[in-house]
View 1 (cartoon, rainbow, N blue to C red):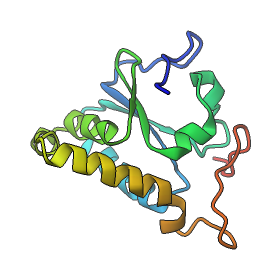
View 2: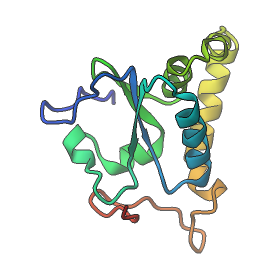
View 3: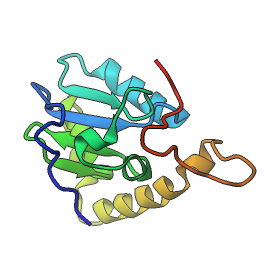
Amino acid sequence: MPLQPPPPTAPPVGPYEVEVFFDGDCPLCRREIAMIRRWDKRERVRFTDIADADFDAAAYGVTQDRLMAEIHGRDAQGNWLVGVEVFRRLYAAVGCGWIVSVTRWPVIRPALDVAYRLFARQRLRLTGRCEKGVCETPAAGQNRRAT
């Protein structure tokens, strides 16, 4: 089911080219976001940590589980982006357009999209975040990490 635009009460994207909703409890995600933050010299990216105790997915018209299932973003107009397209927009915003252009090639684009979806399904397990073989995401309003 495609994501609907955020409700009018959702925080605006603002002067950014893209907003990324990332899992700050994920070690791999934190490393990638830290790298993008360093490269974002012109502050074109808004970073929103969905694991932050104050984050409220409902304010954006989505569920915490949906945001945890795969990476999400919004463009400057507030349109939702999901999966590899979020990374494409992030890298373009920080000046790595040459990487983005390669990921749009006809054979590479679908392969990356499939590979990311497979990774996203196993992300909690691959980053050591399962307990006793059970991988669950926190329910909305029950984010684990306080700032």
